[in-house]
Image (tube, rainbow, N blue to C red; front, side, top):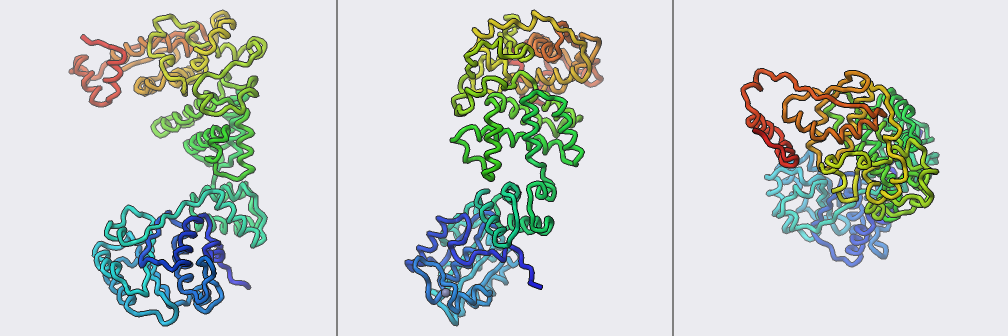
Length: 577
Ligand SMILES: [Zn+2]
């Protein structure tokens, strides 16, 4: 039986041209060898598994080759090259400084340095993970590094350049290795798969490349695992399963559900993900990544940011064409907020579900009018509101959508819009649909009947109430972060069909809530489809400790605990007596 060799070793490059993803660097090295201008010390920096040691070995082989090729490559057939390839050359010494970092180890190495090569021209010393040397060892090494015999070349390799002493840096020629791009990794894995006669799906390799995060050695070892797991037939699904990665398929489906406002399907999909044992927090983070990919695939300028297989990229482009930029912005913001809040909230599942519900809210469903915008560059569309389709919106937009399109200002009393309103923000914004439409489209909106003409009075319940409360918080402008955080700590409770009670801990908070009440009611009435909905605020009974403070002291204490409070007080121009 043939001996099994892992792919990382079997397909280790034997000359510079077969090194993946370091073209400019290998060219420089080849030129140096070709012209015979060799330094006596090199420092190779870069992440793990990108070819530092491999290049060091090829370098050692090339400078010892008896018949080097034009352009600095080793011939690969002479006795010296053969000795290198079979790892029996006496002209190369490797020291792993991670495990041999003492002064004794370095003294031993320095003794070796004094012995000239028996065959060949150079002795090459590769010191891997050189930043791990103890400082005593560093000092012992410095002298040798400074004035080595003419037949000695040092190649130091490190993943952490910043830990290298300046005295060492200044004595070396420094080469920075690049992370592998996903495409480089995919191409190389594809090459290995072809050589070995495996069948593979490019998306599966893309997933492996992503997991390896720029390291070729890691990618190859994951690849080997997948081969033994799948018996040489590597599919996207099998890789997902084996690496415990959530299939991208879920996110494509989820966004399709968002676009069609299919809330129940969203929740069921999330349920399925949880049942498969995936973590809700990771799911949301994955959703944010998916949305980000959709965003960058809309524009040719940002398209290179999408590191994945061509087939997957086409898939993203297709879905992105069906999304409006503002929908992606909104969903991104929601997913990001959910991600931030996830760790600290008690009902984690609900937190994610609220995010999904808000993403699927019908107001942002693109439906009609997508065609005009599909090739619109990001910058342009984020600078100004989207133009409405030339056809009158009345005939095009379903009544449900139309209701939500009516911006809060259409119905809010004037004093409410004097509050910190989205209007003051620059229009590159992550704010909700209604706000984004406001200025550009007032004329069109005027034609549509305002929400209040059809007063809806649906009885509220606890779930709807919570969702509406978070919808209000989510719609707060970004400069009101402190306010949003404060409101997140509050929880309205159902009192009757049209009323909720909000218990607050002190009069200042109560005042804050009352100040925001017009906006709160405006948003929540729409969300709850209940025009009669109102909120009663109730003061929590003060606890023993709190009694010893008057309101000014309490404010001071709160400011100490949370810097946002002070900002809030000055923004809202609150006064205390
Ligand atoms: Zn040779």
